[in-house]
Amino acid sequence: MSALFNFQSLLAVILLLICTCAYLRSLFPSIIDRNKTGLLGIFWKLARIGERKSPWVAASCLIMAFTVLFWS
Image (cartoon, rainbow, N blue to C red):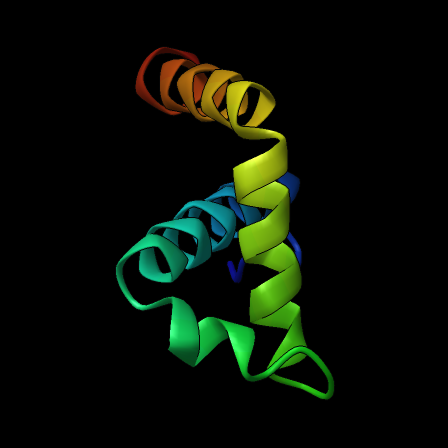
């Protein structure tokens, strides 16, 4: 089953994208920052979410890890 039809997998993919974009922006800010509009602007927006809401994203990652390990 693909991540589009399984809600838990969709949330995991979104959380991983947020964390990856925020990490890549911390390493290579010029790559993410030059693409603020268009299709690649999605990665800039995900990086901003990861930076500004980092305690909430971290808590969501921990909850997701707990549910993947022990709930499923």
